[in-house]
Length: 255
Image 1 (spheres, rainbow, N blue to C red):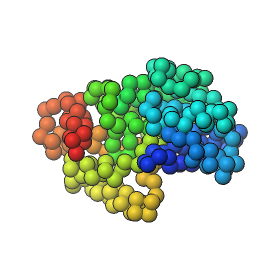
Image 2: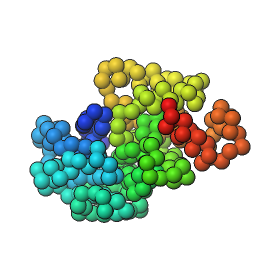
Image 3: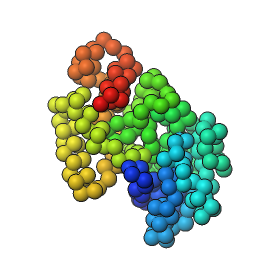
């Protein structure tokens, strides 16, 4: 495997991710809710830290950046459109930009909706996408800044990725997301099987992320707003995809 990825639980339900490129030993972290657990993991693994990759400006994703930067000397990467509300960046990135982690290329995707200026990090060679609060396991982030059209556009970007890409999202929200998804598609066989797997994992304190794009496309209601069977279940057969997505998102906000 070109990348070794370690999930680091932080705060109550956040995840940070340590990524080591195996050829060179270069290491990055995606988001820093708090520095302590990440520093502890680096020490246990005997890894350096070269890059801090920030997805968006919310405090539960950046509060530990300065402490981690000071402790490790890592360079900080984040969204150019978010630069005014992020820790100081060494590299300001926009959609279409790419950079290297060792010998692996990382592509930057604008995934606005949860916030405007939210970015995701896609390592095509390793089939790994770090989506934070845009696409989540069986969900998507609440729309604090974007609108339905913006977030549906983000869902379409993820739907266009290969099915075997693994999505590493920013929170352990999957049980709640699963309970909601069942209200949209109660007879979806793929969803029912996934819910059973989620319940078993959480009973054993096992993270439910990452999950594949293919599994999200088969089970995540926010990625399925364009499907006739979902529109029929919502009695929105003639509605636009954006309107159906908006109806699902509104239902989840009130769930």
